[in-house]
Length: 105
Image (cartoon, rainbow, N blue to C red; front, side, top):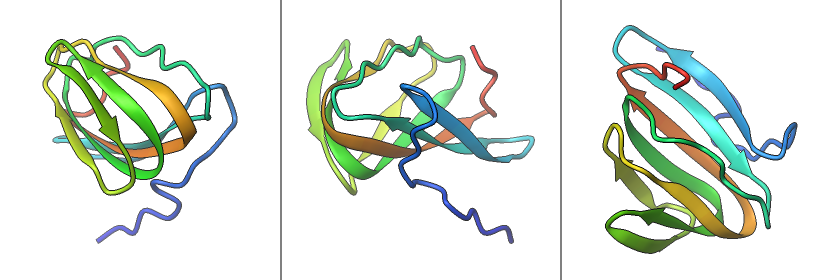
């Protein structure tokens, strides 16, 4: 067992901040933080991705549409799908699960 201390807590070291808390051969877990009013500039990833909103409010935009998100919401984004958070009205902190592990692309 490994306890991930501080996972899902808003961090502001950069305009947007990703901190990896765990990496195994099958998956990785981290926290992605976007400040209120911030712009999500991420590009599609090579990995399937699950977001768990721990704090904050925003919208998630994908080719399928736009969805308001807030604490407790869980979002699945398949590998290669365009997606981004918009209209960040409260500091947003997300647990992010990648499978396979995040490659940085």
